[in-house]
Amino acid sequence: NLSPWEEWFICKERELRDRLQARALEKINLQLEKTKEKQDSERRRRLAEEKHKEWVQRKKEEERRERERKLSKEMAEKATRELEKMQLQEKAKLKYKEWLKKKRAEESEKKKREKEKEKQRQAELQEKKERSEKIFKEWLHNARNKARPVLNGHSYPHGKSTGCYDGISYPAPAYCNPIPWKPIHVPPPKEDGSVSVKSSKRSAYPQSRRSSPMVICKPQTTCCVGS
Image 1 (tube, helix red, strand yellow):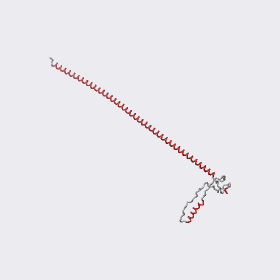
Image 2 (cartoon, rainbow, N blue to C red):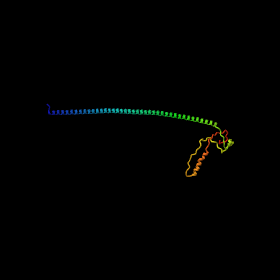
Image 3 (cartoon, rainbow, N blue to C red):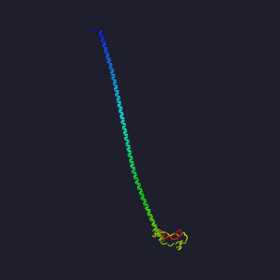
Image 4 (cartoon, rainbow, N blue to C red):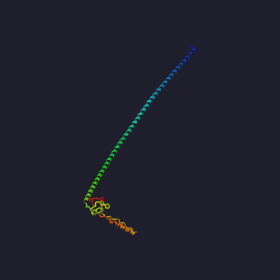
């Protein structure tokens, strides 16, 4: 049997061993917990890095898609502008061709009208020329066939030329109106009898100066300027 001291000592040793075991176990548990926390932290870090990488990758993909979308939109807008520009150019060319065609047609019509006017003018001039030549020939023929009148004047006493020019003598008129001149009748005023007599005399005076129709031809020999 053990003595009380031995039992006490053994009990103390047992308590010390239990405490050491508990302390060692606690230390091990603490290390395990730290290791676990470290592992958890590392796992969380890796997970965060992976998530960050995924986010960066996703962001890059979104940016790439956005750039592609913008580029596609810009290309589509550029193509639309080019197409509109080409359409406007085609419309402008078509409008210019239509305008040029219309302008050429107007110029052609204008030239045609001017040509017709010139042709008509030339025809009228030719007609006037032919008519003038015909009238001149008729006048010349009639002038040659007319009887020559007897000249009675200061330079032609008894129808014979004196050989000198007389400024008092006048050439015979080339044309006389066959219709006698008739004065316009003006009724005399009732107030003054003398005025009525004078006006009647004046109205009667031109009747004495009525010209008789004459036929004048150019003489064969002329020495006077008045002839």
